[in-house]
Length: 275
Image (cartoon, rainbow, N blue to C red; front, top):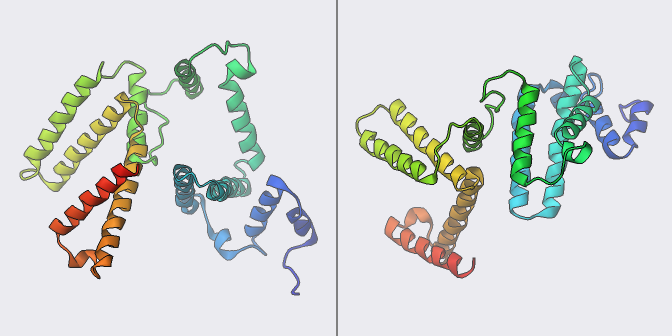
């Protein structure tokens, strides 16, 4: 066996259990003398895309109800928290323990009906309002839409912006007005598609999508989840088209729209017969 580059103290910490072992692994990976060159080079900015990716993979495992995979994906996401915390500790900003303390304090402060003296006799909706009110107090004298992360998926951010505005009264009173606005925005896209610049058309499409997110909010549908489900449905049905074409020794590029559309309808009927 080759001798490890790690000193005895590090090796001992790697024999720890639970989160202490993971923290020791992260520290070893970032050690300037004996760590992994790739890990040493990373920064908050370069790791952030991986953090987002891991969060999406957690959501994907949940949607597929793949619990063994979820265990692994949650571990990957936890590792991202540990990674950022290690880099922050090296820069003197904060430690992993500080992160744990901050979230613990926040959860206690935002649940006075559990950890304090507030009544638990509240609806989930009232508890959500109380949660947002507490967040607003923590933000202090900020603008209504401050604090909603720019890096969120666009549909999710649209939903959060609209929810925040609605809490101060900036909202249509019923779904009917949202449908009217949706028709208006769709008409503007139709009218503009042959006359506007690409930049202006992009703006009109953005307006249409924003109203779609608002319609989903009024109907109590998560637009991000709805679109993910639609993506999965499209993937599943198109895969069936490829399967059926393959039985004929063909690929999609060797077919035509009419044939593939007929197969799409067949896949759609199959879905409805076996939901």
